[in-house]
Image (tube, rainbow, N blue to C red; front, side):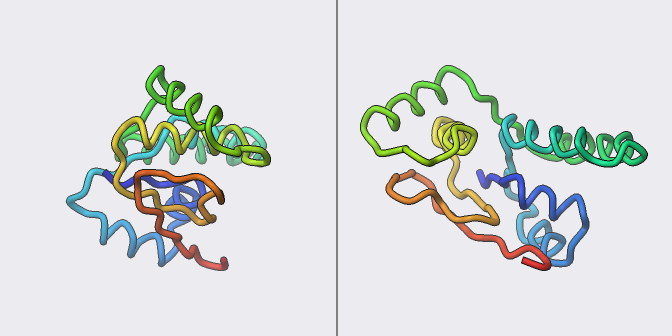
Length: 135
């Protein structure tokens, strides 16, 4: 399973050329994201211009139907707790730790994101940095 981070989801929603190529490359693979990433998108929609909220929310819902959505559940919380107990997680946003723990708990093979993997922690999946248009 390959998982997409919020920045990649935004690029797909905007229809950027690099994201269209990524979607073509991922055909035939199980593609996932987390409820936490979708929470971020919902927050962005809610803070956006009122005139476009309905249209943007509908686009997020269409995208959601195309993905496996991984929950932050007991298994993810246990993974997060283990990382917090043994690793230095200072300065890493809790939402990011939640996303990564969710991916680990669900056996993700690859995390595709626009940003770097937080330093100092080891995760059992490959990280691929996605270069979105304009980035």
